[in-house]
Each structure stands twice: as structure tokens, then as C-alpha cells.
Length: 327
Image (cartoon, rainbow, N blue to C red):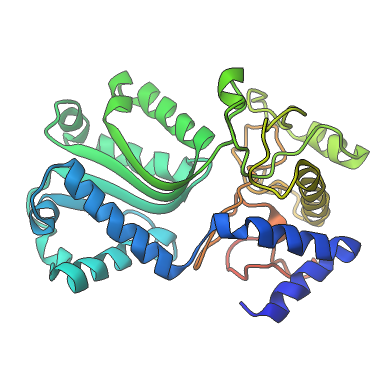
């Protein structure tokens, strides 16, 4: 990505261009993972898993471990697994593919981001439904773990609840999670909400008429997830440059995102698509509001201003990726 492209993207915010770019550059170091950094994190994750499962060598650990591989070729999981294979080969002299058919005790699901949790839930649910996996996990014959660069607190809690409802309440106690960055966006109960950094886009209720009318028009029946954050949260601003900058940035991104969403001409637009990014269709919110990027991917749960790329909508995305927008 060139400097010229970044400036071209920012200039679409007109008089707010300099502010948007300045604020983005302020929090970007917290939310961006380069490929080199990803390699470092995955190397450490392997060592951490080896230590947690009490193996004396990486060879012994990998002999007993399967990396769950379920996503389509264009998805992030394939590249993460490719990096893992290279690490094992170059650093430890281990050819993972030659060991796939051996009996395994540990199963690890690697991905980059868990936002709403839909994909991870589907894949874990399918895995637990296969063969004797659920029985083996509950009896400690097998283990199941997640490895993520980033996850949403609310999204992960939803996965736990759905897995408990679908399988067994005890499954929560057996799902190990390794992560590098957590998006804290849980507003209930109050004692948890007051500890959340809200390191995402989560606007206040004081919005223009157009935003409130759009929200009211949504058909989502689940109002348990709040569309707006309380004015007193976060209790301490540690993500944006100031509380005032947070409010301004959130409102700019929301209003511009709504402009883009309203350009959709389809008779039956995807109900998950919202100004602040894709979300669970039943949630009556303005979007997930994810702020987290990697060298190869941006989640479509990020605000649409970062990735919207639809012919005729006159918008240049910051991240030029395929299969994101819809008209």
C-alpha cells in the first residue's frame, strides 16, 4: 500500500481528511500485524502450546497435534497454516504433512480474527459433531484449542454460549484460547462494561436523524446487544488520542459508512451489512465496529469505509480486497 493511496483514501473525508488520517495513525500501531510480526507470534504460540501440553520437544508435540483445516482456499486460515508449516520446517526440521495420518491427541483451530464468531462456531460445531470428538474432549482423551491474532470478547462469549447450548455445558471448561489482541466490546453486565477498553468503533446515541432512522428500520429482533455505548464509557480513554477524538472519529466513520450502505440497489440487500461492518443479522446495531488489520486481510466486520469496493459507488477502499462489497 503506497502513501499516495492512503492519502487518496483519506481525502474522501473532505474537511475531516487530516483528522481521520492523524487519528488512524495514532491507533494503527495497536491494531496492525505485519507478516513478520505474524511469524513471530505464531512461533511463540507453538512454543506456548508445547509447554502447556507438557512436551519436552516440538517434534513430540507436533507428532500428537492436528491443525484443523476447514476454511476455503481464499480465507485467512490457509495462509496461517502455511506459515506454521514453514516455521516447523525451517526452525525445527519438521515436515508437518508427513505426520497428518498419525493418531492425534491435540486439535488446534488457527485463524486471524474472531469477530462475530459465526465461522469459528460453525467449524468447531462440525468438528465436535464428527466421530467421537465431543466424548473424547469431555473425557480428556483429546483437547481442543483456538489460536487467534485477535478476538472480540462479545463474539467469543457468544461462541461459548452456543457450544454449551448445542453440546454440553462442560465444553466451556475444555476450550483453550491463545490470542494476541482482544477487542473489549461487552457492555453487559455493568461491572464488566466498566473494565472494557472499547478499542473499537462504538458510537454514542447522539446521532443525526438519518442514522437513527436507519437503525429503527432494521429488522433485527435481538436488542440484547446495545447499538450505542453509554456516555461514561470507556471510563478511561486508552485507545483513541482523546475522548473527544473518539467521538469525532466514530461519528465520521458512521455517517460516511451509512452513505455507502444506502447506495446499495439490490431489492434484498444482505441484512448483515451495516455502516460499521458486518454483524449478526438478528442484532439491531450499526455494525460490529472492528478495528484490527493484518498484512493480508481486513475483516468485513470492520467499518465499511475501510473496505467498501463496489463499482459505481465512487469510493476508494483503504484495503483493496476482493469479495467484500455488494451492490
